[in-house]
Length: 293
Image 1 (cartoon, rainbow, N blue to C red):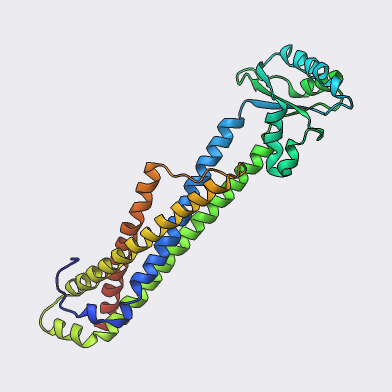
Image 2 (cartoon, rainbow, N blue to C red):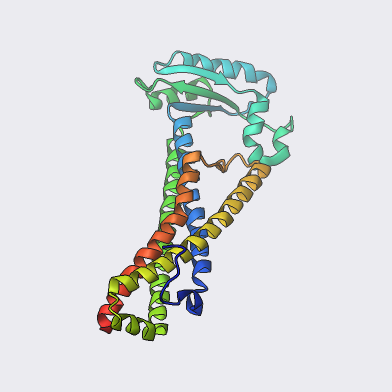
């Protein structure tokens, strides 16, 4: 079907010359959209796993630096005495500075900057503590101390991830629709150009299915050629984006990496595009020939 010589001279048809380029562009967009779904989905899973069962306690910076150890000790005693707290870890000033560095830049490393003290708390998922009572106890121990369970922040991130995924899926749907419309237009144009050849084949006894096979094989070949080219462009673009993301070292953004299964699924897009082109051409030819007869 791909390499046999066709009775209808479709290879000489100028109307289909731009079809591989359009398919390449569509596969390129589809690959980028699907890759963004994979990246965002894995980022959302990491955020959910990393923050579930975690609590961050923030102790405001003291007026006198000498008071800092005593304030931390009071808060840790409250946490250790709270049922449902499995463990805790007091972050060093250097670790706190690295956390705020994406927002404050090198100023976060300045010794005179009054950074709060942070305590990472691990909760028992089976018996979590009463957060309202814990917040009251922490406020009584050191005024201004806050306990953040990350749920609001995590919910906003997950909503953002869902919105990005929905947008990418809409792009995939639009790309598929555009591919079908393009193949329909090209196929109908080819039928009009080769109308006399098709009528001659009918007089010689050729059935509509035979003519449909001619067009669907041609569409499959052009779709596969364009799809492979678009896939290669997408691979180059994805590797380039991954390299740029690695150079930027932005901790707030998800890591731009794809698993082996993701690459396999992306590699199926050119084949899917070619099959869509073949099926669309076949259906278009059969329906058009019925109206022509």
